[in-house]
Length: 286
Image 1 (cartoon, helix red, strand yellow):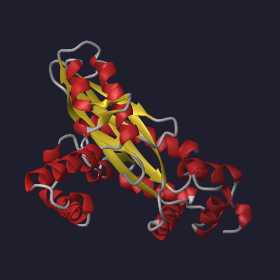
Image 2 (spheres, rainbow, N blue to C red):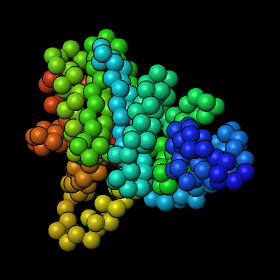
Image 3 (cartoon, rainbow, N blue to C red):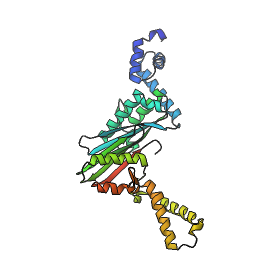
Image 4 (tube, rainbow, N blue to C red):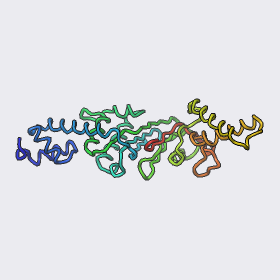
């Protein structure tokens, strides 16, 4: 089939269905001798090849989307990563992330594998649809993360997305205090600022703690000011440093509150008649 045999209407229909550039659609139709389905299949395969080529490239940018039920009892946040800042503003990418959030909220997807396996429609999963988008836009993209939280009784889900749209947090709080929704949102803002890893210290593997203690003991052994101090005093200093510089950086409840560093997060939340049930911090590389 020659170029003259392919109409502008055919090319436009294929472009609308595939999202691929006009010239690529025209070439696919010519090679498929005007067969729409064959042309679509060729474009999908081309997109998958593009995705495979770009799979190893760094994804330092991304976009978040959040869904919180009207009653504030359930909430979802999703993260999709990309290579460059301009891509996260493109309509196709934004449309993908928003649809992903809707599906994740409806399905309750708990991790990236479940997120990617969600039915996207037209025989595709969320993961395969993202590969097609990579083929269209020409940049590596990855499903970055998902959180689905639910609270029963007196509780609220809070969310915060920073103005760069790539950093954010989702939090579940419970308690009897007033304005739990406001408290949850403030905790989210703290998380984006302070970047905790876990809620409580018992969620940190013991071997990590032991490794840090061993490092601190080496520091103390080389510190002349520690020479001659009683063993009990040295141990107290070690535990103090562990609490401040290790747990205090990683553990949400033990961090200094972002608006009043002298107070621990757990204390601030307790004073508000609340407790943090769960949280998820989202940022590229987090």
